[in-house]
Image (cartoon, rainbow, N blue to C red; front, side, top):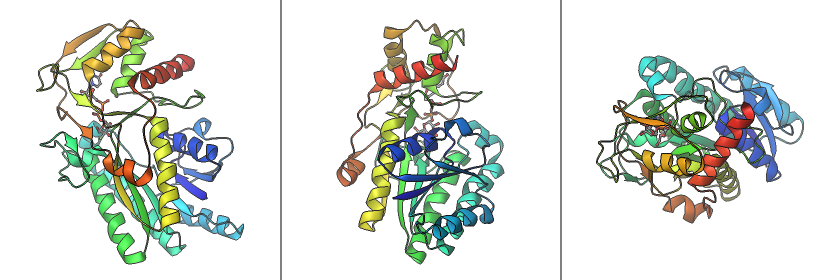
Length: 326
Ligand code: UFG
């Protein structure tokens, strides 16, 4: 299949491109390089600079590929802003980039008769759920603009699919971490906020100490519980999802996590079995739900997908990637 990966220079988009190429698919990457980097784009993928909010940038590629006699069959969207505290400070930027960006992209796809869309959504659409094991039919009550914009995007896709006969694969990510086995790509940002990279930077001596945000939650050891999924497992689910909607002509909305919960302390202790990680307990971070775990039965049964890499593999690959970065 031939796939347009919008946001293919970023963390998840680049890993998905690697898995698409490994599975023998053809990839065209569109990215404005706002947070992505050209060095993350697989050498076998074609790269075109462009901004998702400018329809002509998208239609130009779609027309070019169609003229080549081998048109784009599936479009994947990874071009979202995704930092929760930033979304609280700049909600309108999030609406503009995430919601308006997707609206423009859908318009371009529909006008060019591209019928298959894969969209990265998030567990943040569930907000602070009453039952921590989230299933796709649970209530969606986001507690920040980031989750709110992703939910608006999900709904826009569903309505557009109904009106214009599209197939969609919407995947709600839980806590993604780790790096590709080649160590060519990983989460490479200046200002990291996520748990695993911060623990690994501490293990490498880039940070003096790791801070555990709160140990008085109602969980196994008082620290928050999350569902960690290796980025390669997550990327492979996208390949299967795209193949599924294209071959079956059906749509799918599914959680994408490992289905297992680990507390912050358990992740830290797993890392400390391998590396020295000085740490300190600090106050809670505002807006953190105590426990978020994916019910993964839907994606497993429909796509036959299973995560292969566990929390140790996630930690090790992030460490190796960061060590290589220096
Ligand atoms: N944490 C620490 N110390 C740190 C960083 C994080 O204790 O230095 C804790 C957080 O308080 C939280 C847990 O580690 O309890 C995970 O935090 P992350 O920032 O790594 O991830 P989040 O769970 O906040 O959010 C991530 C994505 C969201 C997605 C969510 C779904 O960033 O987009 O997972 O579970 F919605």
